[in-house]
Image (cartoon, rainbow, N blue to C red; front, side, top):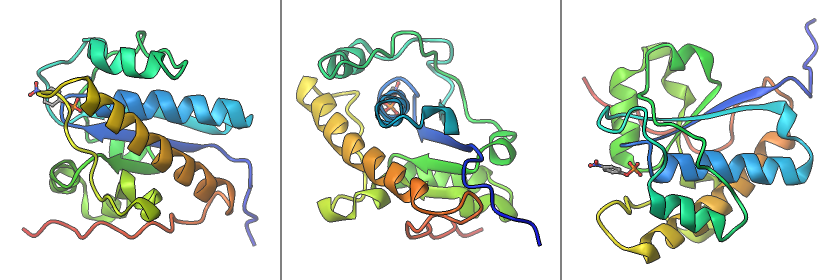
Length: 179
Ligand code: 4NP
């Protein structure tokens, strides 16, 4: 019988709308926490947006500042759009809000839909299901995003480190979109 390899890398894609605020924060924070924990080499970590408006742009200055205050640099990231290939290449695809998860489920082949989850499933104690879009608000919105993402990223890492590489996530699956 094929044995699980507990140290096989997992690939994780964080997804929001523009890929300049929430998902680059999630990518940067998850990488930072995994590095601090000494396990960053076990993961392929990326982010993407459902929209194409900001493709090629660095993260929003407010996202960069909010993370710099936590000692995390994301200025080298560049926005890209989700592609169909992402559903093959990534093991786990984490949406920041329900609009994002619905957009992903519309794009995803039927047999890949179980890869799509809401990021906040991994911080169930907070009782918050979605990471709100901070783009049209102020600095406080970005700080709040960082708080939520930090909790969920720690929960995700704990979840992934506590089971064999072939196991599925224990977060509740997102209900597939109809039609
Ligand atoms: P994000 O935020 O999805 O967290 O990157 C947004 C960035 C840009 C826009 C909307 C949301 N926009 O409409 O341009």
